[in-house]
Image (cartoon, rainbow, N blue to C red; front, side, top):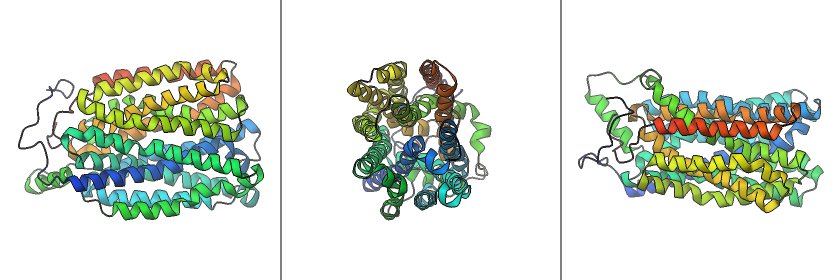
Length: 450
């Protein structure tokens, strides 16, 4: 029977939980995962915002204004390009040697790369070396995040009690909006209390250098996390079996349809996220004339509003299923995509905050569901790699090009908002169709092979 028509089965009593399940370990795992996710998305959020505002002048001053913005967004995309590579390599390692050790390495790599960005010389000091090093470090950031973002989801979901996998995934998903909020607070504060010259000279470095303290705390917490029961059980079965273990990347050969559907289901969330938090910043400041402090404040409020949506999405998916909850998030994203630019063009600040909050809430509802939804779609031996490919390829194909494409559209057309709205709505439609074709297994054990 195909994976699309496999009926949902109730938990068999003897396999509903791994025998080594421990509530304390599960709580430690979700705390570690949430903190690590917040650390890594904080760095991405800061870079995403600065790539739209300050970095064109600091690292690409020899370009004209439009070309500098395009070049800055291209370096932003370098991190997204690296994510699938990181997802493949770290995913394969995580499925083979375990989730915990791989995730310790990705956390350290991400933190070190971010600190080094904070120490970079600008173009005025180092010439072409500056943007070159920036691209290299952005690549390393994305490489680490490609392994971390999904790996920590698998770690948390495999540690979670069966009836609350969605909730634990939802708590983990708050790491991203928390990071966005912290990034907005940091950048808003710096923009308010520093002059423009001081912010451009050294103030922008502070968020990246803060990664030292965050990294130390993150490593301390993560060292206390044990390997997951599901992975231990899978390793035990593999050791007792005469059948060879699955090779790395077996998911590509054995579950290509599932991987493609996961990629497409995440297309809207990946694309609309960067429209909302990266290009919207550029549009509000460059096209509508908002001050940086006002724009950062708008994102801060919108992210604060969206944080509970991740937990709501995860908890709701434990009650009504992953697919229905995921589709609810996509519906909110469709509403936001259709109305975002008309509302922002009205120059109504509260309404602009509200519509970006709707977009982010829709994204967080899907994000709160996604960890469990993706994990349940794949067997233990392929879970890390397959989930990582689903998220990172969606980010590469549908997320990374968005700021660049949006900048090009607005520079070369007279109906830029209409074109970008059409792209966003198209992504929502693609994700809805893909979600409908994925299996629903929220009532099945993770220890059952599909």
